[in-house]
Image (cartoon, rainbow, N blue to C red; front, side):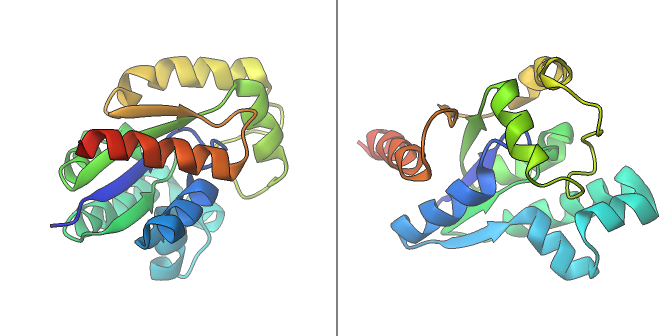
Length: 172
């Protein structure tokens, strides 16, 4: 079974962008869990949250994580909150290597502000300190990752190459 590469991390750390490019480079299939949930439900993540709430979204996420864990040779960009449910990490982690992408709170704020309205858990009045507080609370949940890669101050190719090098070392 060809292992999957599972990217976790807070929103705005680059999971979708890095994941797509990493999949291209490694000739693997790319799945963005949020985009897949949108395809399945016919609703954007923001609309799903607005209409049915976070519980429904997390339920969709859990079902999808279990399905993806049965597949192979994929780069999976998870949603930022996938780590909130242990079942997700157990399923996905059993199918491959978990890599945590991280960025500074300031960088995250800059990135998510570029996509206003598409991030249901980011309030308009949030600042870098608010994000730092959330990151601190989630830190134990991100411990599931075998590797940690910082995306702040790096371009996509640098991050992709760093992940590839980490995975090559693992194979040796």
